[in-house]
Amino acid sequence: MTSQLATIHIIQPGYAIWQDKQNAQKADGTITLVLSTKNLIVDTGLPKDKPVILKGLENQNLSTENIDFVVCTHGDADHVSNNNLFPNAKLIVGLDVFDGDIATFVDNDYIIDENVKIISTPGHDYHSISVVVKTNNGTVVIAGDVFEYQDDWKSPENWIAFSHNPKEQINSRAMIWNIADYIIPGHGDMFKVDKSVDIKAVELKALGTFKPNVYHS
Image 1 (tube, one colour):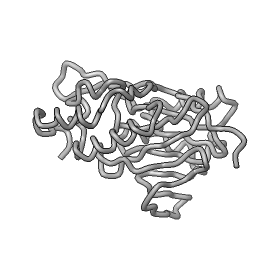
Image 2 (cartoon, helix red, strand yellow; image 1 turned 60 degrees about the horizontal axis):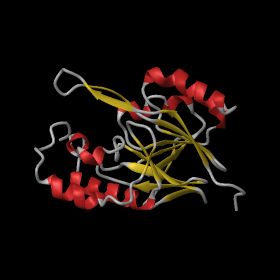
Image 3 (cartoon, one colour; image 1 turned 90 degrees about the vertical axis):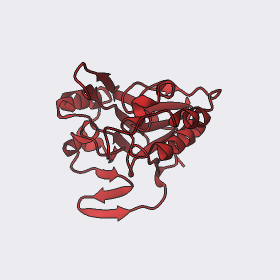
Image 4 (tube, rainbow, N blue to C red; image 1 turned 180 degrees about the vertical axis):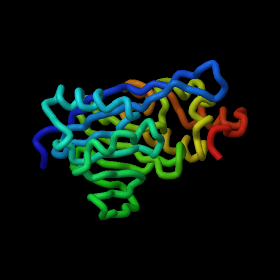
């Protein structure tokens, strides 16, 4: 048994700002550090974020060698571009776990320790995963782009535009909404879950009004 719960440090909140040019965003992914019996970096941003990551680790008296796992919630460039900072860490992408060049293929949840586990949350793409973390403030789910930002359920067209399978993503979002006290989205800061909102009912009702996805095939 571990003596304490995990702690979470957001190295960089992500952002996604639509530009005047059609179908263009200024965007970068959220980068999160999880400290438990093992240390994890969840998503590694764009190439420009290398100094941000190194400074974030330094702030916790850590170096890249102290990271045990790199977890990529999905494969978009703004979530994976600094993986090579951690050549000795195990790499988890889509519940495939790489230890060097040895791959283990996981069917269900992947348990890091009693405070941290990786779960499948498909929809944004077919291999999207999220990290469930027990902390002193409750359960935090690091959701990648399953959630884009706080209150994205109020304008679902903004996340549906990037979804491979909106109905499946609605199910993943509802599951996360149910288990989480706080969510760390792919392009925003951590937020508290409003349990008074039936997010699945709201989004299923709205789904029929949206135009076909123009960003993913």
